[in-house]
Length: 166
Image (cartoon, rainbow, N blue to C red; front, side, top):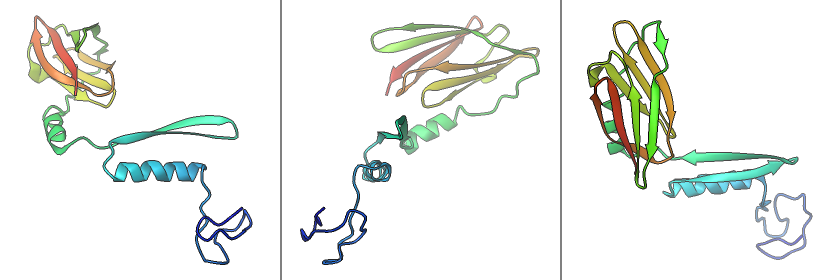
């Protein structure tokens, strides 16, 4: 093996070149892959996907950055906690996908106002909580990564949401 700084012949196991003192970096390993992804994220790239294998076992690490301050403040407005009663019901959900948006209808019998509903936006899902005097509704709804709620309304005890890509 040759030193990448001075070209002198060195042993593979050496960490530093004995001729010029240059640190010998082993490339292609898991730590180098993690280092590259972390450095790219720190330079402002929105994220990365890392795949590597150890002893034939494959795994993937997905790194996402935090949303902008504006997006976070909008989301916090709808993250009030609704205490659910003991009687939990999983609501019926009907989703329709269109070319540029997704329409989600959720049947919530007994729910009369949007103030009785909390929808928390997660990275690839929505967490729905709603409460009436007698029933609590809870549902995790998978959505494509990068989608957000464009609008929502409650009509005839049915929550209607339109989701679109950011």
